[in-house]
Length: 401
Image (cartoon, rainbow, N blue to C red; front, side):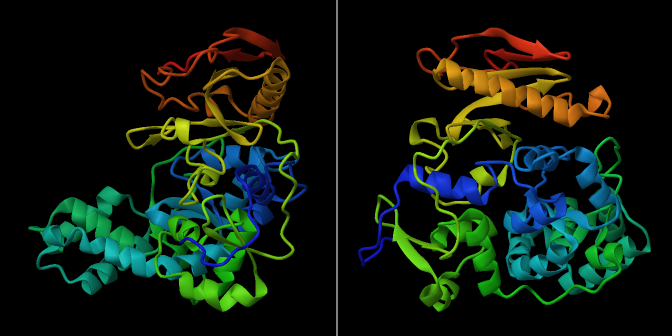
């Protein structure tokens, strides 16, 4: 929404630095993994590995075992919340954020109503709940159970209805670093042994969103949450917020005491996994993604692992064992390349410590033929081995499928 009032303007670099500071990406935070998951309002977890890489990019001394331990002790869980995508949440947020977005999940079921003709949605939810709370079930098992009562319904629609109507969590060992397992589901209440709380007050969530993603517009938060009609909450909070505008005149809200570093504050390279919320949680993503490279991180519905240089999206990466390949979208100074190599080695060494080699194989495997096309003059400079320590190698070149 374009502002009708003149507010202080935050340029793109200023917005970038403020967002990186909130996202713990300007410097690694001395923070526990549990506190970071809470501060960030959850971690995108469409795949198993990304939450671990997200925290490595943000926390000092992070090791995968820390988050894995929280998964096994049920202090964090994996479930569908914002934007109908899987997130890793603290137990508290799992019980209280899902109710906040439940109306959106209920509306999602309506898209499949043709396949649910004759199905009573309340009865479906009741039967599915009893089934998954007797023991964790696969989605295939849930679908077969529901087909017994509604054999003429569309199987996929039944699955969607169960996923949307019930707050289902993926039980461990799924999601635990170093282990594997089928996706098995039960309700969050059953898994945590606690009743679902009331939805977090929307005003509180607005403030938490600004703390993690601000400064931001109403539309930015609606994009992150997958909700609409949030302006009323922002207007209630306006007296206690600072108001800016971006270079296009869009009104941006922020917490008075939140960090807003200078635009020239150094931003070190950071390796982010696919589906990192930094790239998904604003309607206007130019604070991180330059317009000319928009769409370069996706092929179809597959997101790729990304590299930030000077705070902005600058390339892709792929990890195979201890071999890290980096594809830059354009030329970077020699000093920046040296920083990329050092950060890449830090990531690989930190993520494979004490783990089997297979745990880091395949990060970025979703990249497909053609990702290197149109990189721009000089983007491929420096292809080849860039250095290796303790078996870790970093190579600049095109990402191959």
